[in-house]
Length: 156
Ligand code: UDP
Ligand code: MG
Image (cartoon, rainbow, N blue to C red; front, side):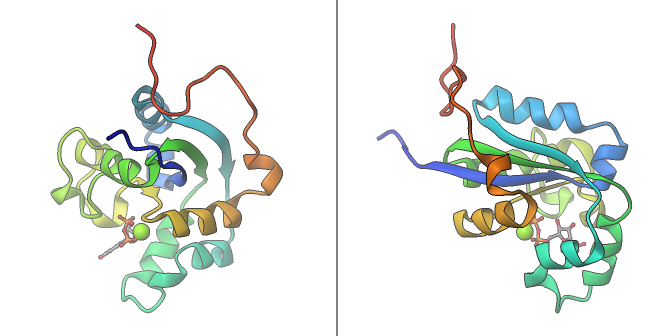
């Protein structure tokens, strides 16, 4: 049966992805799949903001390195919307450790180190909503009605 879960996911191109010129490629993959970009901004977050985004990981040994990595330069913060975009977005992104990411995924095509894995995508609907609130105001994510399909409908 067709899956009708209309979801939103928070996707972020990390500083290395921005610096390496991968913004267009990442956006293109989500667009071509059929998802709708409903918010986007370049951001240079504070240390506190990054610590809050990765709050669940603060007890991990790699946490200080992760925070430092995320502060190396601006990031691209995005909200994507469409059917099952959270789980599908994670598939588009690939495994956390790029060595486990399949070719054809963003990480599987562009990186080899967990500590430089170029992209973030929400891992659950609840965390997505939390992350969207942390990075965007309500006005910024208010989706305007357009002719663009939200659920993957393609012409031709
Ligand atoms: N990370 C790391 N070392 C690890 C695990 C994670 O540097 O052993 C970093 C990596 O950048 C990862 C981020 O911390 O993307 C968040 O970890 P998470 O387990 O949430 O992975 P993700 O959801 O990004 O796949
Ligand atoms: Mg995660």
